[in-house]
Image 1 (cartoon, rainbow over the protein chains, first blue to last red):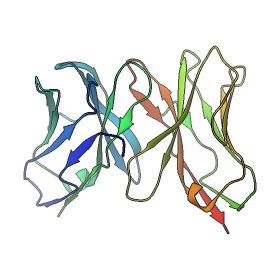
Image 2 (image 1 turned 90 degrees about the vertical axis):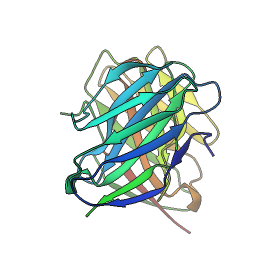
Image 3 (image 1 turned 120 degrees about the vertical axis):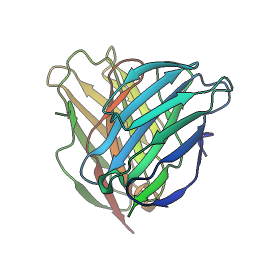
Length: 111
Length: 111
């Protein structure tokens, strides 16, 4: 158990819909990262927050957004969902600029 | 394109053998590398890391070697066990701990 908690574990939704994925980082970790894992693209970095502020942005679509709250938990919002958004979404947290600890992921299926 | 990549998608070994998983990276400015293990249905799990000022780092049954001249990483697993069966990713720190992952190598350990 990495200490990073993600909910829900599974999510099935229709195209065009909007969903919110939630992440609770390890106690004391200020950095939260979101990654997308798909079969054809592998693990792709989406976005990073540090103590409530966006710190780095990767291959995140404009339809996707994230935020980190004062209690350090984070949410990833995915809107206008397309079939190609089906993937595993991982949250990770880090105490400093070193290794990141990953949650168990949310499997999103868009039908 | 990706700056970190793995050449072989699958490595099959017998229990008790030593396993070597290789990874090439292209960003010579990268200064921190991590190996992750991902079991089916789980998030990536930190195995071992190495900074660019080191050539070798050892953990429990695992050793990471870094050759900066040819931009190559390897993960050696001693006395491989069935529980080591998983997909192994090398990752490169792109800054602020945002990781660029290779495509992964599946390690299959036969009893």
